[in-house]
Image (cartoon, rainbow, N blue to C red; front, side, top):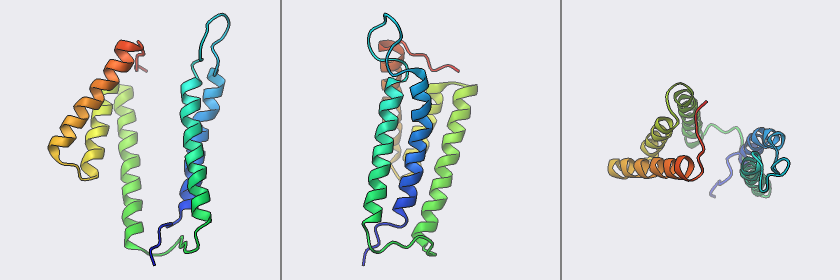
Length: 152
């Protein structure tokens, strides 16, 4: 029988916690703009995004708990491979954060896109084109349209 779960409730809980880590500070930023300024506040977009993250984490928990064939601590080659992949992705995120802080946001996003596409087996041409398009969209939307600077 196909074992889909492989510990989904645990991963869902981690996703909900991750969403909470961003939701609580977003409320402190303010969901509604202060004073006479109309529209959403600085915390509106992070609150919406983290709410969706928590919702989908809860969905993963619910879906995992209704399953019958869950094996959490089984020595499974697929599970070992996924754990290694998880740590590799975490290392890439930390590296990109360091590059963002000390070098440039757009370089960090380009390296993040390149490394993710490489790890998940995308072809080189797709990888390069996707990275160029995604970084150009980030630059155009945030820097040019919204005048948001990603400097720390």
